[in-house]
Amino acid sequence: MPIENPAAENAPGTADNVQRTDVQRDFVRQIVREDLASGKHVAIRTRFPPEPNGYLHIGHAKAICLNFGIAREFGGWCNLRLDDTNPGKENPEFVAGIKEDVRWLGFDWHELRHASDYFEVFYRAALKLVEDGKAYVDDLTPEQMREYRGTLTEPGRPSPYRKRSIEENLDLFKRMRAGEFPDASKTLRAKIDMASGNINLRDPAIYRIRKVAHQNTGDAWPIYPMYDFAHALSDAMEGITHSLCTLEFEDHRPLYDWCVDNVDLAGHPQLWQSVVDAGLEAKPAKPRQIEFSRLNLSYCITSKRKLAQLVNEGLVDGWDDPRMNTLRGLRRRGFTPAGLRLLIERLGISKQNSVIDYALLENCVREDLDATAPRRMAVLDPLKLTITNLPGNHEETLRFANHPKDESFGAREVPFGSTVWIEREDFAEVPPKGFKRLVPDGEVRLRGVGIVKCEEVVKDAAGDIIELRCTLDPESRAGLPGADRKVKGTIHWVSARHAVVAEVRLYDRLFDAAAPDDESDGKSWIEHINPEAKRIGRGWLEPAAAAAEPEQRFQFERLGYFVADRVEHRPDAPVFNRTVTLRDTWSKR
Image 1 (spheres, rainbow, N blue to C red):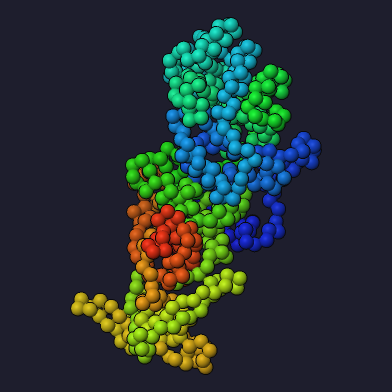
Image 2: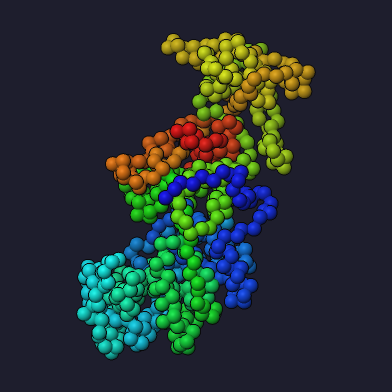
């Protein structure tokens, strides 16, 4: 798939802090508009149905924004439904994480539902299919079923158990429900068409025996419905009008429609009563499944299995490791919900799978943070600078705007003394061509202070520079006649006496290859883990930065965007994570 990187200035959509003037007109929204205009629907109802077997990742953000966003845009509602039909792999911890992530992204649900809420309905619906001669109990093993299913070029073969009588199938299925048979010994299959060109219609399994306790229903059920069956009926029961899913479910759509049509919830009052008993008041719907392309980003892995492997093998520090592309990892790194929503908006909705350049996500986050993050000063690689024409105990308080583009952010007080820390890279004893910062006998403006001249370079016994001794031009200070005198460079600083030392974690992309899964270079995806994706160091911060609350974001001037770690940061022991650099540093690589 091609890698796309639409130019931000030419992409549609705007950040949350800028007034929207455009209207999204992707094909999904066009279908919704037509359905409303024709009177087919008077209200739009969607759902977001994740399986609680892991934490949500960046790929889920698109489905969340689309399902919740369309419902909100057209005055409808969206349910959060947890597809908990696979006990043993699901965990209440993931349920809590999913709910937290959806809310963090800026959405809330109409109702919280679980597929397990409908287990009795699913069972009665399956009984109906058996009674109608549309489902049968099969004794083939899973391996034999795969063998009988055929291939893309060869039709399947009917199971030898396909001609069982309705009475025998009813008896066997009820005994499956009673827990009489061992795991995987029998399967309930829909009777559709073993010669169908769509393999999903070759008598798919709709129930299997699995004697595993369920987190919500305990040991009440020894059998569990398969995803395609449960998902289609859940949508119909909840009155969902538009079932939005990714392109890999396109081939499943005929089975989705078959389940809804052949169970026919609305046509059987007794069956629908079981839906009412499940707490649903909506009339049964015939949902329309619509598929859209996944969100595929370069330098990313979105396989839940591989994400779990990273965690379980200790290759990352947990599901919320800021290197992970889980939503909780992105959140801990400092990515903003508005930045993620802006990315989804700019990408739009299509049916064409492609890989999006990770730089586009970073640019969307930068754009949001540029508008919303207050500024602070910090130094990560300190070099001592002493102003020799100020008293050694000199102290004063300077006033700095919190945001250069928005006065509503107010201002803060920053302490200043005769000794400050500057970034080591802001001085060059032998400057390269075009260097505009401090050099021996050269001048530079200390931001908000005035112009200093380097008079002496102090080195230790090993020849390393340990201090710059400078003089401050007193006439260059704010409000004095020389304040407007021009010099080539301006550098930031932190008062050495007042600086607060913090742990600073510099995060980058977890993988060093745009397509980690591509093994054409002879490397496995794990071998593409970027060893430079996490570097831990120290930083010297102005006091107003150290006093931040967890998850408070700043632009550390000239360094990048940083966030106070939501887990470990404390004002008396600050921890900051770098969210993103000020510019795209990967394009040069």
